[in-house]
Amino acid sequence: MAYTNKPPSQRYVPSFNAHIEDGIREHQVAWRDEALAEFRRNGGQPVSMPVESGNRDFTFTPDVDNNWFYAVGSTRSNVTGVVTVVPDENGQPKVGLDYQANAWDRYNWDESKGVTIDLPWGSDMSIPDGQMARLHTTGIAQEFDMAGSSSVKHYDLGGPAPNQGSLPQPDQPGREGDRTDPGREQQEAR
Image 1 (cartoon, rainbow, N blue to C red):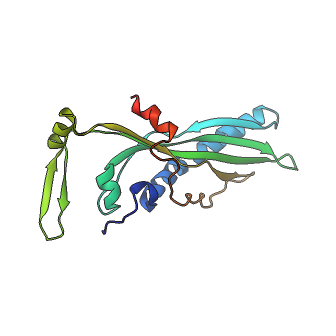
Image 2: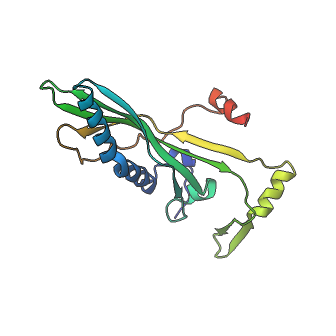
């Protein structure tokens, strides 16, 4: 796979999107059923229920995306959101999910890991994480937290019958803020 000049934060990775969708699909029936039960207990009044999927790992292998593989390797992820049930004009429940995907990891150098980089002239170069850790201990490199969340998406979970349609597509890749982004300072204090 060829490198691209776009930073990893500006590229869409279909298999990561599928990973997030799988997390939603795994829970959507239970989330819907629980919210509908509360709607009925509540006499048909609107209901809002916070939801969260379990934390799941995702690994960016070189065949998934070389740039993400070399930039972060793997990440933890989950989906957080709110399921709402409101009565429609006939008093029938209408169920929706407003959610966002979250990803995070601690970027550090574990002695037992490493990476092998294929070089253009046919050979490769192995870099054990222990060597990278030495850069950290001498003050040349620094460990850091990586975290991000998608924009909030809405998915119709259906009315009297569940919706099995497609989930919303991710936003076009982009990045807000820069090195003076105030949110970055919060991360620096860790």
